[in-house]
Amino acid sequence: MALLFTQAEADFIVRTFCGRPDANAVHSSAKHKQMPPHSPNGVDDPLDALLFCDLPLDHSPTNEIPHVCLAPDCHQRTQATRGYCRQHGATKRCAFAGCPRGPQRGGFCITHGGGRRCTVDGCNKAVQTAGLCKSHGGGIRCGADGCDKSSQGGGYCRKHGGGKRCQAVGCDKSVQRGSFCVQHGGVQYCKFDGCHRTDRGGGCCDVHRHNNECTVGAACHQGLCAAHKRRHVRVSYAVPAFLYAS
Image (cartoon, rainbow, N blue to C red; front, side, top):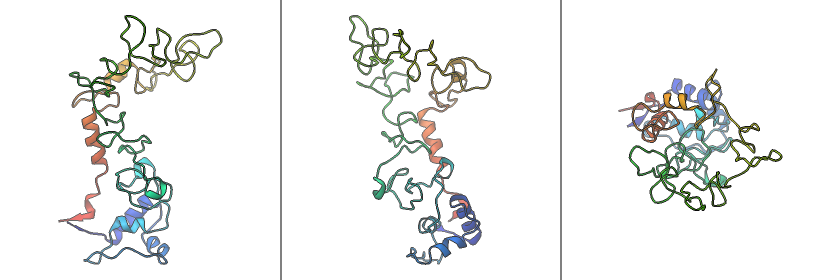
């Protein structure tokens, strides 16, 4: 497939990613730099035209360019779909646009569907140990006799003293948000307007979280299951069709 790169298309690309009115700015700003070789049909590669210009790149999630360093104003290519060039540490990032976390298996972080999933039928949570999530027995368990709950810190569940405690004077309840328990302000409410229920995961209460479950496959708190979220992200990175011709 040969790349087509007309003046109109160049204007569109530069306006979108460099924030300049036309593509002539690319060539004028790069006249003292070594430009990449022309393609056999005499048409420039639009990505190379962007990478070899001195104009600032907009790295906001909606304007990220796959395989281009995420560092501000850096035009270097990267091996990873999202990440940094060698000069900026050569680290990879989750393939979900705008996510600052590192990738797990599959190129995504745990939150966005990467890594191994619990082996219990119908469960889409991340594996802790032995192929199981915390809810189904994976991870470190509470050290109190007869308790099989998950350890929250210090080897114990919250009921038996594990995890952080509320910093309000005289309060020994477990922390919910920040450094305080629910009673002392450590609570976050559902993100839906007019809803006063508490956040039960993913920014939603139990009611709105279930309403936002994936309608295609196994549900998660992000509105899409892991498999369909991967498909959605890959489609979002697709190159505009007008750049190609068979």
